[in-house]
View 1 (cartoon, helix red, strand yellow):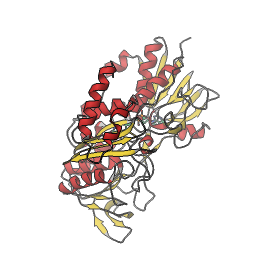
View 2 (spheres, protein in one colour):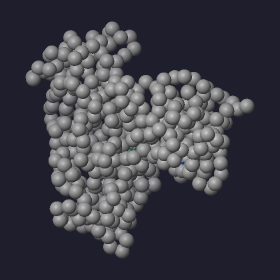
View 3 (tube, rainbow, N blue to C red):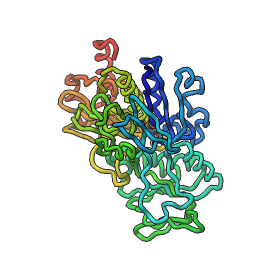
View 4 (cartoon, helix red, strand yellow):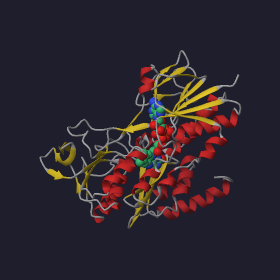
Amino acid sequence: MAQRYVIVGTGAAGIAAAETIRGLDPGSDILVVGEEPHGYYSRPGLAYYLTGELPERMVFPFAQQDFERLRLRRLHARVVALRPQAHEVTLDDGRRLPYDRLLLATGSLAAMPPLPGVDLEGVVKLDDLADARQILSRCRRRPAAVVVGGGITALELVEGLRACRVHTHYFLRGERYWGNVLDETESRIVEHRLQQEGIPLHYHTELAEIVGSRGRVAGVLTQDGRRIDCELVAIAIGVRPRMELAGEAGLAAERGILVNEYLQTSAPDVFAAGDVAQVLDPLSGKAVLDTLWSTAVPQGRVAGQNMAGQATPYRKSVPCNVTRLAGLTTTIIGTVGQGRDNDLIGIARGDSETWRQLPDALVAQNAFDVNRLRVLVAESRLLGAVVMGDQTLSLPLYRLIAHQADITPIRERLLQPSARLGDLIAGFWSDWTEHHAAP
Ligand SMILES: Cc1cc2nc3c(=O)[nH]c(=O)nc-3n(C[C@H](O)[C@H](O)[C@H](O)COP(=O)(O)OP(=O)(O)OC[C@H]3O[C@@H](n4cnc5c(N)ncnc54)[C@H](O)[C@@H]3O)c2cc1C
């Protein structure tokens, strides 16, 4: 009899799993259930949609023919319960769906602060296409806006609002931006660029209340008693994995659903992948969360392989994100920071807990104008890097870090105070590639 696969979530992990299963089990029945009305699209692309750089149609990586080619049955519905023992899920309309293998790829949702006024019309977040559309529609009236939070999404909101010519204030609870991933110089580069763009940054500023008038945002009050009038408040204080189904079904979970190296949860025949999965990091021996597209896809693929009967371990790769911070292309690779960020309640979007597990490492850094390079140097290898501006070394650094290349020949020179990091790494990369046929 044909295997019945049910995948909950039509995001990067869910679709990657479905594609993989179809390749391995051509005769199977694959049902993809998602509550998202717009189906499958690139969430990172939403930032560029907000700034007007990407038309809406370009955020959809799949066309109708792709779903037909893969013979995926799609159901627009919300799964409200999971009964692992009975091997079935329940939909919001009461229907029960049996499965042989189930994938939970339910992603994450923006956390909202428990503040007075947070439910007012005009308080927005950036989780999905509907949010992005709503922000763009509100921007037509050119409201004044306040952005609260940290990480990539807060900046994407600031930049999106600025592109709509909305006067935007940015509140930071601490003294610098994204302090647990960026170092002080990198934070200051980003902040300086925001200020140059005319964004008022309010340091040590915390929201006390969102003030409303007739159900709509009219302003904010800060904890130190200031009031700023505005009609839009955008919140980006972090995300929470969507664990409702797993929690009620009694699956093992911490900050996300705990999975073993095959991405199996504690329940038989139930797998998890993507933002919702808390996955073992062999480097640290800890189970960590990643909220990265580039992690969700390979996790979905490995989960799909294992759901289709293989026993493929998931090898967590070095987390990497190429993003834009205040217009400056920035690549973050491996372990680069530590500590807490006062602007975030936990993990943000496009983030990795691995970035913050800074073990014993020395820092080498160079800066020229807005181009900045920081590498984390351990005993004989590089652990992480932040490349801002000029991206020539991003890929070489990613490969050297991912392959744990032995950098002993240049280690001491890298750590010299006046070291020309770019030249040293480029030279080492060139030698290294000669001895590694397919780096
Ligand atoms: C604005 C923004 C910017 C980002 N920027 C970056 C970036 O620069 N770099 C990067 O690598 N990553 C970035 N990300 C993160 C990246 O998009 C996510 O890590 C990735 O989409 C996770 O994929 P996923 O499949 O786990 O979850 P999602 O893509 O969130 O998909 C989960 C799906 O499950 C559905 N669902 C949840 N519960 C149920 C239920 N009970 N029943 C039915 N359906 C359900 C949801 O509706 C959703 O469609 C960004 C995300 C956003 C929103």
